[in-house]
Length: 464
Image (cartoon, rainbow, N blue to C red; front, side):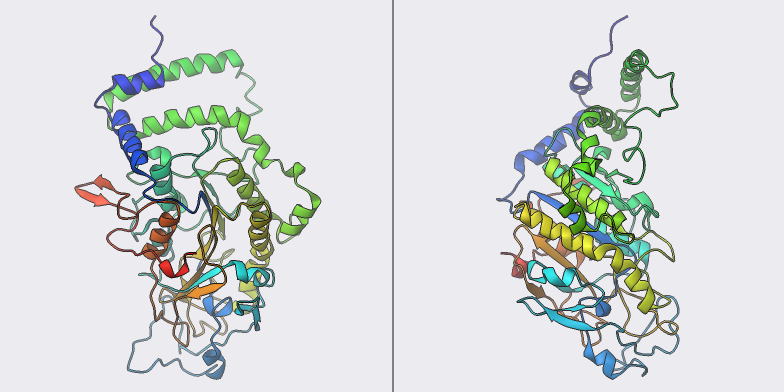
């Protein structure tokens, strides 16, 4: 019996099949990218799921204290609406104390005592804006540039455009909150209409096997080296037959790539999750032994180790989807917000400091963001409702001018006065990676699609 052809032979022989087409698209893209000299080599994004309250963290508004308890009235007959239910629209002052920090004099709430100490390394975008006040749509928008499902996320676009740094690790890794996936579940990490191999590799750091199916389960005693070899040979044959029947299905190419990558990761990945080699100073810096900080600290350290090992884009989530265990503070901002900030504040500040001390911040871009903000009036007695009109993002690292703020919200942090959209943020991130956001596109259903749709401008004011 003739042995099955190997993967590269198969791609060549399949000619007009999608496997060859997808490969030519990627190679064509890589031949023209980067479009200019990049400042950033890799990215780590920290996504706070649920909608962080801007006026209780980094965007203080004295006007709210002045009007506390009064009916919210922006004047000029503007319509005031709430997303879920905020009867009365009573102005709610922040219950947290703000102080200025660093040489930049950035105002930071008491809920972030550790991040307050690194503000001179951060650049704030204080008037981010979303088209929606709904979690799922807002999450899609901040990750893919669209409020509808089916579009590639930023990590997938970066993977598609730039390829991998290390052949032994994925280009794009996602570490969700162990308490659960965010709104839209895996849809936030999707490759959409790009070849399936560019979707995020999801890792559960609390599992005994963080990467699913990397090794056979211990109870599967029937799996031996010989049976694995025989199984792989059979799989090659099945893949060949499938590809001939369905040449336009990119999932086959993705599966083949994932099997090859899994084989390499069996050697390269395990050490990344073994933190025993980290110094006690590092563990203490991140709060690895703390009851509240241990989980996010572990993911931040593993994220840093992934960047060191050659992963290009790492995304770490705080907060599961649903009414609790996230940043969706409807009931009581005084108790719900600190519960979340205490989990991430120390690890995030430590991550920035650690990257800086290792010289990695010079070519690593750090992004802290959320899907939208909160309202300046109360929901119930002390909660806040969703607000797409204004929220906040900060960046640090490669190519970013530190210690400044760009954009401006109104006196209540209700709406942005100078709107900054996800398109602008995405265009800027791609620019720092050496990509012109208008040139990274894929023809799909008769339209040249891109991460920034038909919008977006690089935010030159924050570039070093």
